[in-house]
Length: 596
Image 1 (cartoon, rainbow, N blue to C red):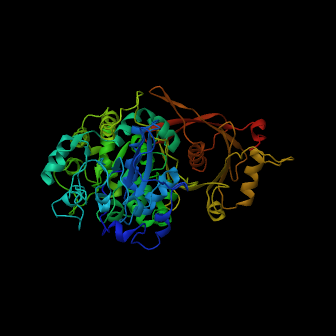
Image 2: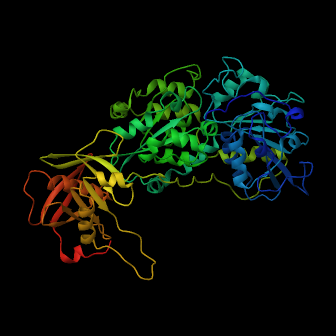
Image 3: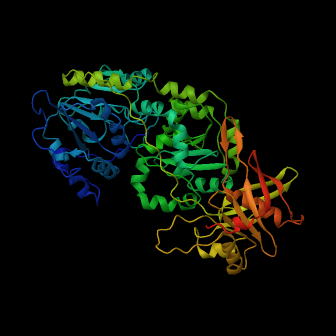
């Protein structure tokens, strides 16, 4: 991800050793990745061998470094080592990521005592300048968009403070300052002309991965469980001006406002904020939205996959939005409330001036409709040079610094992994049902997020007993195949009659059949009905709705004052802008006897 990490007080190699100033992080800084400790003088291995040290100060900086690894892919002459630069409250998550990667690590105190053939970093801050060897600085984010309080001069962009642009022992600038856009060289020159002479426009390796992966959009949406819904992604940077600090209740309010069958929510949150709060605390703070099915992707790579899958974006002033804009021209709206961090002339500053502003969750539809094509792509073009060869450019430069010829095979940006689905999927819904001349309109909202609707629809076996006993419509899905030597299973009609008996408050009970059809019976009615939804064709694709949506439409029809049908009938179920045809008829004996 993109925005810059914090600048806490730093310490020298001599007095910091391998121990951080933050309580509770001692063991993490002493660990050594996969248990193997890097030894030797750090310089040359044998023959043409070179040692490259990846120096990270925070999780977000490490994630950017991991995008560099393909540059050295397959080259046995390169030994890759990692070290954690002390001085950041966000360092422990970085070390955990290195450990999960199985990378060989060098404790900071030892790293300072050696020289390396190359040192690659994604942030110049902290004591990085104490490491000896040619330094390569790669982009930490999508340009220089923020000025962090208490970090360098008040008018200095994060990452351009001259204090951090020179090595400590000889005051030399980085051997290569790899930037993503020519304007960034101009800004670097204003801060340190000598450093700018070592700068080159390489491109952004994270963007290369995003653009290379855009053809996987359908796969990502399938893995997320998005389907035909619109995926609305919220992106939050870190710090006091971020979305999660300024609008902590926005995810839950959006979940309560947007129909579940029309929208899916995801929140991309900066790794620094995750490090600061911890996974448990973050999940507890976001519990209402997560319970309603919001996706919280992994901060390393999944966040970018989710941006590719997105249909619309809600952003603060964090520059993750620029990757979304670079990949596609889809709606983006702002919740940024101003403050001292955003640099107005930066690409993010220009973007936020030109896109609609979201005042509240209830205004989301209007804000998205107000977006006009153009400002997103213009902002991305101001942040990134034309993409396509960043990996090759960086490879050429770093091998030149190493004094080696690159391998004779090509390398490409690695595709982004599929994101994981929502970890919590709601199974109880307040269903708003309205009978119109066109059919029954259904809008479902996760139970408890908003006002009660026409009825409460509950999936039996997927929620607590209290919700089940409160259901107006109680339904059950087929169980997985049994491995019991002597099995015992309900028939569809048997379970429906049992449910109506065991749950006296339930008005209708239904069973979803293995075939995808359903059976439903209303209390007091003699007839059990078979319910079947017809798939809908749309631009060469087939749309199918969850049978539970159809059951709510049929329930609303059968409990209404209208006479109940006694033969085959067709009704329409309206979900958002789409209409689905439902066939309703008396169930056959064979259907009633199906095992669920």
